[in-house]
Length: 183
Ligand SMILES: Cc1cc2nc3c(=O)[nH]c(=O)nc-3n(C[C@H](O)[C@H](O)[C@H](O)COP(=O)(O)O)c2cc1C
Image (tube, rainbow, N blue to C red; front, side):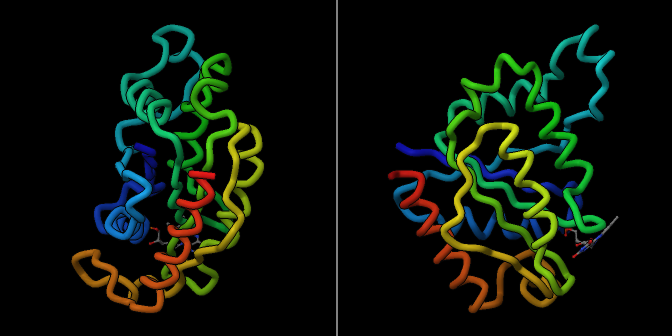
């Protein structure tokens, strides 16, 4: 079975990006088995902690889960026109030590989507992720784009996707991504 691990880059309880990740899990084509990862317990990167204590358990566990998956779906918020700190911090920890990266990341298909209450649908944070994906030697899916704007109306108060047009766009994105992953 081809597994995709999805990671939302927000710690907020009512996160629109966590809601988008849940919706992606529900709409995932049968060709991909979905599982959700979490950045919640990942501490702030500190080289002294790494040197003295090694990789924190939450990071090691997520690395193992990503290694076991055949693809990654990143769901990113946008902060100040770029990658939110918690997500960038998680990615920085996941890149340690560099010797582990080829087995976990090199050549692995990755999709990037995101949601914001703003107007530009996380276009800037998705673009800002591209150099990071390159550093990880991931294989980005460029077949379609998903920029979810006006998120306060796209999701209801329980975090359910209630906008049919966005649902259709997400389905289209995931179908293309599934074909890309299984190519
Ligand atoms: C520090 C900060 C900076 C933000 N900058 C942007 C931004 O540049 N573009 C944008 O669309 N939204 C921006 N926002 C609004 C976020 O999109 C909004 O808080 C969103 O709900 C965060 O994602 P989440 O719902 O998954 O937690 C910012 C929010 C914060 C807290």
